[in-house]
Length: 514
Image (cartoon, rainbow, N blue to C red; front, side, top):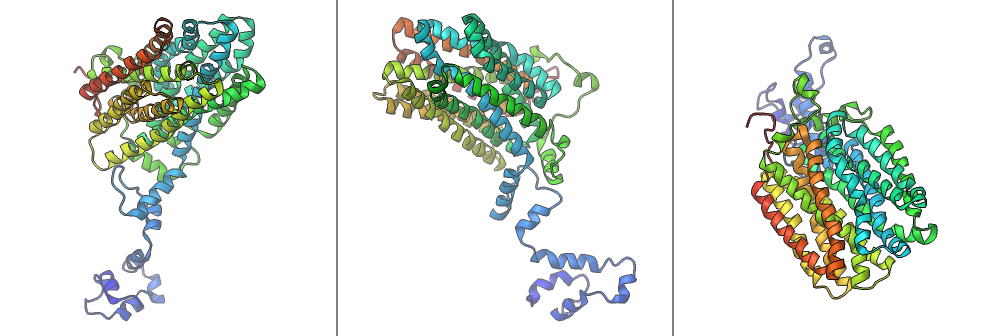
C-alpha cells in the first residue's frame, strides 16, 4: 500500500485532511447506484490524479497531446532521450536523409572530373591551364542557375524543383561518355549542363529544411544534409579510381548517373513538400514542427504570387553582403581544394593517382562528421539561450579562421601524411560554416531564402571559377601551389572579419521602406 503522504494531497478536495488512507482507497470505487448519476465529475478527476504519479516520466512525454515549446530545455535526461528517439524515427529526419543522399550524388557527379582530369590530361596533352578550364566548365553552368533556381524554389517549393534538378544532372552525367566520344566541346557542354542542374540543389535543401524543421533543429538538419554533401566527395574520390581501373575513364559517370535516376523515383514517391501534406506523419510531429517554425506570416495575394524578388532591396542591406562574402570565400576554398588536391599531392609529393585520391578524400569524411557536430552544438547553444547572432558568428569564425591557419600548416608540410592531416583539419573546421552563413539564409529572409541562396551561390560560383582557373595559371607561372595556398589563407582571415562585423541572426526587413 502506498504511503499516506502520496494519497493525502490527491483527495484533499473531497476528504478532510484527517481522513485515513484506507478510506480514500475504498472511496475510489464508485457505488453501482452512483454510476447512473449524471455527471460523475467528482470521481473521474480523482482517478486521473491518482494514476498520474504512478506513470513513469517517459511515457507521459511520449503521449502528451501538446509538445514542449521549441527551444525549451528538456526536463530531465529521460525526456531528453525520448525527444532524441522521436527525432531519429520521425518523418522529418527521413527528409533530411534523402536530402543528404541527393547532395551526395550532387558532389559525386562533380568530383569525378577531379580524378578523371589526370588521365584525360595525359591522354590529350592538356596543360594545367587548359585542365583548369575543363575543371571550371561545371561552374559555368552553376553560375547561371542558382538565382533562377532559387526563385523557382521559393515559388514552386523544394520538392518539385529538386526532383527535376536531380533528374537533369543525372542525365548529363550519364550522357558524358557518349558526348566525349563525339567531341571535346560536346563533353564540356555536358559538364555545363551538370552545373546548370546542380545549381538548384542547395536552395532546394534550404527550402525543405525551412518547411520541415523547427528553428531549434535546423542546424542539425543542415548538418545531416551537408554530411551527405561531403560524403559525396569521399565516394567520388575513392570509388572513381577503382571503377576507372575496371570500366574505363567514363565508368563512374555511368554508374553515378544511374543512381541519380533511382533517387528520383524514391523521392517523388516517399517525400511530400510540406509536413501537412505527408500522409504518414503523426499528429504529435506535425504540431511540434508547426509550433517551432515561426514561418513568415501569409502575405497578400499579390505579394504571395510575386515572381520577381526585390533584388535592389536585398542588395541594400549589409547582412546580405555578409552572406555573399561568406559564400564567396567558402566556395573559393571549397572548389580549390576539391579540384586541385589530387593534382597537388601528385605534383608536390609524387604519389600515384589512387594514393592522391585517398589523401584527398579523407578530409571530406571529417567535414561530414564535424558538420553534424557543429549543427548539434549550434542548436544546443540556441536552446540554452545564446543569442542567434552570436551563435552564427561563433560558428562562421571557426569555419574561416580554422581553415586559414590549417592551410598555413599544409604549406609547411614535408610529407603527404602530414599534408593530409593539415588538410583534414582545414576541411573539417570549414564545415562549421554550415551552421553559420548557410543557416543564416533562412533567418534573415525566410520568404526569400531560395533567391537569396541563389544570389550568394552566384557570388560563390564567381569566386570558385576565379580560384579554380587562377590556381592553374598560378602553377603555370610560378611552378608551385604554395603561394596560392598562402593567398587563400589570407582571404579566409579577411572574410571572417567582414562576417563578424556585418552579419546578423535576426530577420531583416526587405519588404518595408527601410
